[in-house]
Image (cartoon, rainbow, N blue to C red; front, side, top):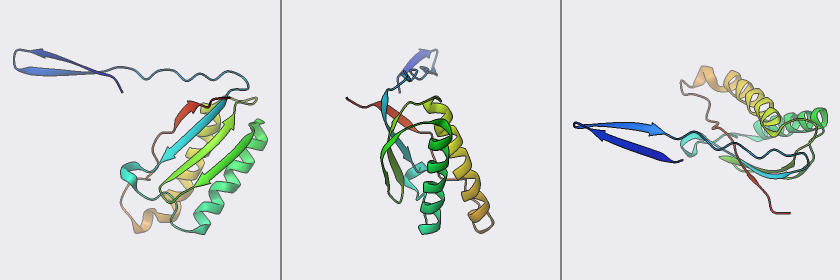
Length: 127
C-alpha cells in the first residue's frame, strides 16, 4: 500500500492512498490469494475444506468462471481463475461472504474472535 505523511506542527497526518483498481477484462486469468487475518487458520478440519470446495464449485458453475487450479492450506487459499460472465470481485465476494458466515455460525459460540478471513488479493497471471 502506498502511504504519504504530512508533518505539521508536531502532528503527523496519515494519508492512505486508495487501492489500485483490478484489471478485470473478459478472459483474464488471475492468481487469487485469500489469507487468514494475522496468519490464523481459516480451515480447522475437513468439514471446513469441503464447505469451501462445495461453495467454490457452486459459484463458478453459476457465474461461468473457469477455475484452473486451487490449493487449500490451513491459513490460505490459492486459486487460478479466469474471468467469466461475472466479475472476479463478485465471485470472490459471494465465496468469501458465504464461507465467513458459515465459519462464524459454526465456531462463534466457542470463540469470541472475528472470522479470520482477510480481503482477497488478485494478480493477473502471465499467459
